[in-house]
Image (cartoon, rainbow, N blue to C red; front, side):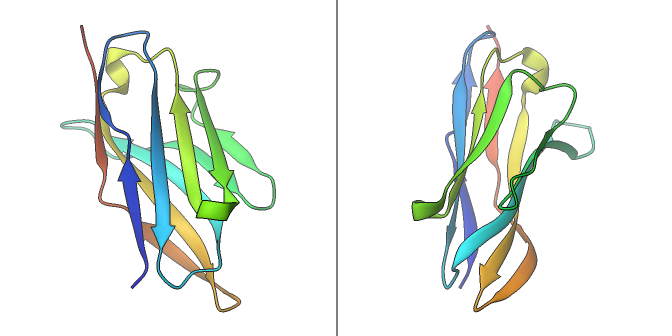
Length: 120
């Protein structure tokens, strides 16, 4: 069974850093593309960052210059490095992946989410 598992969330003071991981497991060959999204209490889920195996990365304006998305192919893992964190970054963070399996791209797998809390 294919699944995405996030880790790395937690509590951090404003200005601090966290690195989130999204690991794909199961019968997959590689990650074709991955996005990170977040949802704060009472708000809609919003886009944070995107990575594609074609070389494309994209970021929400609110995180540009502070967050960085990257992929470690050998472990089928995508990372979200979050620096200079602000209280408004507090949310549950989800990864969403398109996975290459048996030569076919399978779209729209979601992880279970990991909580990030930024407060003093």
